Image (cartoon, rainbow, N blue to C red; front, top):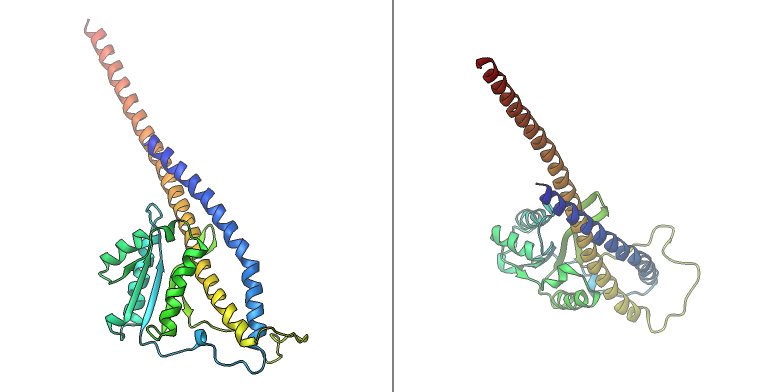
Length: 278
């Protein structure tokens, strides 16, 4: 039991170190994300902006769901919760869509196993996407998703992942990746800055370049958040296992001491009984 406690304690420390690194990566994206959203907000607030293909809202007759989980276990209900969430959304929100028009992409070896248990047809993405998220790899995945959306082979793309809020809090969410929701100009025109900019090339051309980057950033941020949540869940699970091991060690030590004292008392009584007999 003491050796098991050493293992769980070591796994907790490893998970904590990985979580710290993931938090730094997420924090580094925040300023870039905020600035990108501000630029998009300024561009869409201008006059004469035509329809934006990636923001076209359509009746969902075909849906694509991308789920994020992990390749490994020992992280509590982290993986099983994602599988149950996908199963729930497919039945409750998209139950009227024919199975052949529902595409599920599983990121993470454990999610692949969970969806098999739920008997949900799906595609297993490359395992390295769940291990160490790389922007270029996710950009390549996004290009295929964007192509399907623009070609009309899917009307909605949904991300299901654990959003990292703090080491002790991760919320399982379902977010729409496409169509993208554009910032809306308030009544006071808060999004429209007083300064007029000369845009080169046109406003539409800039939006055509920036919006796919914003979508890619959203997908990559979801991947990083899922990884951070995995490490946090594993850290909490190993902390709980370590605490349980401590309690069990204390209980077994007490029981061992009781039995040892009882055996010593019995031996003493036997010795005293033998002396009286002599």
